[in-house]
Image (cartoon, rainbow, N blue to C red; front, top):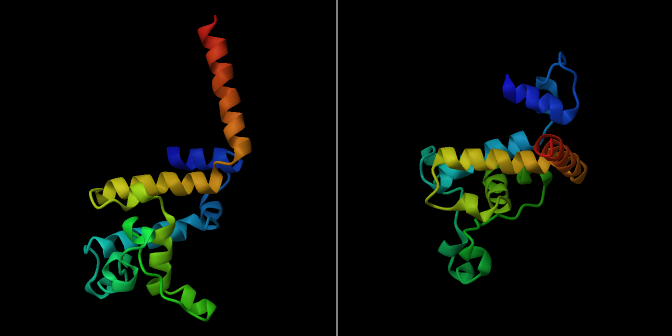
Length: 149
């Protein structure tokens, strides 16, 4: 309930408005699900058929010396059609390469990964410059109101 209230506040919905349709329209939901499955693929905790989907660049002989290989990027297969780009075989490595490197660490647990990924994607979706300014102003107003009185 608290998360729904926070989502209503961020998107400007009313107190009694349904939040589920608003959240369904957020493309970061799909990125979260694909990245979570990619995490399972990379850490070999997912289904067996995911084993060969995520190939690290460091395992490919011609690409092992690239900076992207040192960052832990995955090989993204080329495709000629839009339908191919949406397949998990292509989308999972692309989403994995787009998330911050601290989330791709091999020492991070699944819970830490999911929490950090939620924060990252939430900031991408909702934390705009105008919201940042509004939050800064409200924090400063709070500090000035309560600390100076």
